[in-house]
Image 1: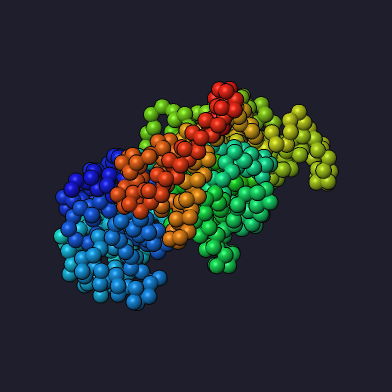
Image 2 (image 1 turned 90 degrees about the vertical axis):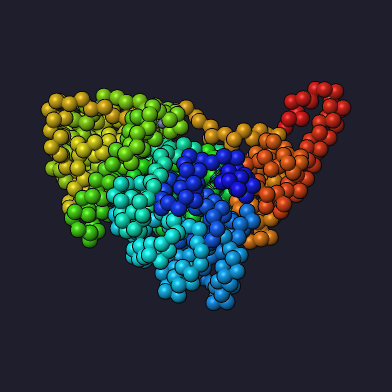
Amino acid sequence: MLPIDVLRDVYGYGEFRGQQLAIITAACDGRDCLVLMPTGGGKSICYQIPALLCPGLGIVVSPLIALMMDQVGALRQLGIRAAFLNSSQSPREQQLVLEEIESGELDLLYVAPERILQEQTLDFLSARSCSIIAIDEAHCVSAWGHDFRTDYLALAQLRERFPDTPRMALTATADERTRTDIIHRLALHEPLRFVAGFDRPNIRYSVQPKGETKSQLLEFLTPRRGDSGIVYCLSRKSVDGTAQWLAERGFTALPYHAGMPNPSRSAHQERFLREDGVIIVATIAFGMGIDKPDVRFVAHLDLPKSVEAYYQETGRAGRDGEPAEAWMVYGLQDVVRLTQMMNQSQAPEQHKRIEQEKLNALLGWCEVTRCRRAALLGYFGEEYPGTCGNCDVCLTPPITWDGTESAQKLLSCVYRTGQRFGAGHVIDVLRGAKTDRIQRLRHESLSTYAIGSDHSALWWRSVARQLIVQGFLFVDHERYGGLRLTASSRALLRGDLTLLLREDVDKPRLRRKPQAKTGITASDTALWEVLREQRTQLADEQGVPPYMIFHDATLMEMVRLRPSSREELLSVSGVGQNKLERYGDLFIDLVTSAAETAQYTRIVLDRNTQGESDELSDH
Ligand code: ADP
Ligand code: ZN
């Protein structure tokens, strides 16, 4: 059998993506490989197909138990003989798995690193013929990346214990230092490197200045009712508050953070995975090890710490390749709060400096005036030719204006008030407010008092934020977040520079519809709902998430193609032999009876209205 046959028969997919075939071929030829692919790129197939094609057992080292169980569940749906070994199993269950391996009944075994490294397991497995060893989340071996795990370091010994088995290290982490680390620390032998681009073309990026956060969120979510997604907040308190607020507005929104009791936390995660249309409101504690393919949006109500964190968190959207949204609001208060948090930490100075630089890079990215995707990929050292047409900047280019004079006013006011106040007070002075503080400090006698009364406080906050991001103002954490001038502010004050600022719009100027759900028309909606219901029922019976039965994209294609025979159903992407056997007739029945009902309705309508109903029958 050829790799393409396995892809078609087992997975039900028509073609390989990107470098998948090259990777599979290399592994089948016995080469070690390093595979870098973004989330959702299709890494799993790269080691699963060699394990199916080559003689012996395929071993997958994976750090997260939940993920392992998920993968095995999905493989079993495809009819692949897979199992896992980990601490969640009873000794009896583990024994059964070992027996299956002994009698050659397994193609794929998932194990945690600490488990495979047990002498007993090593002896047992290395005495057998193995097709491939895949090391997933391979960046865990590097102290440079995030998620470093000491037990990953010991995986280097797999080279001696399995000298004839090709190894494949896989990760979605990009940077060069981590890559080199992986190769050395896992002792890969003359590895072939496969580096895919990091673009996630189906994700639409947009960033809005923070105004009324909740109404902005509501406006974003309303056209997306019924979609599942993640809303990230910085604090536990705002997680709880936001979840409740959304629930009161009829969304199925559940909180998730480290301060919750464990049982309700896992219950919420479980519902997110198993039910359609659940929104999880979470701190960044949520997401690691979630590979739900149909997360339609990731919304940030607070700024993450770095571009890397942002990319990782938003990467959880749209693994299935269908349109998805990465949406974020951010404002001056985020900048000040994050800077303060970083500086209050006990970390060494050097570390703090790096964190500050990373935050600055993210802030700069929020304010970009060129294609957001190009800028994001640029940060990872990848060139993106042209513009993407699928980010906020491409869709509604920001308006810029000459902010030199306004910036001078604000900077002078910072100077006149003694460089020790936060933006709130400085803006009060500029706008000529009559606060107690101003009276107490006699700031109404300053020359800059009320020179900016022609604009709103919100407008001035936007100017202040952009001045901070562009380095013309500095937030002095040692003095309670007071604003101070920088070396470059002087040039601006002297008028040696012209400063372009973005005009903040709290609502997108062009009302954009959410991205079309791959061409589902009104007349298809009924069938779509019927198919989804059937899917949920099957999933519930088996205790697996609905997406393991069929992905949304597969159901959508059924709606579009209306397959009426097994052969036609097999041509739908995501329907392989096993799923055809198990669910084929059921879904063909639903599709055909829906077609009959539609036809019947059409006939009745035609009769009743004598042909005037062409339009009606479409609804
Ligand atoms: P990763 O591990 O890289 O995040 P996965 O291996 O989970 O990605 O794959 C992401 C999704 O893409 C899965 O739903 C998978 O079934 C699907 N997929 C992978 N390869 C293909 C392909 N060649 N054609 C269609 N879908 C694919
Ligand atoms: Zn763009």
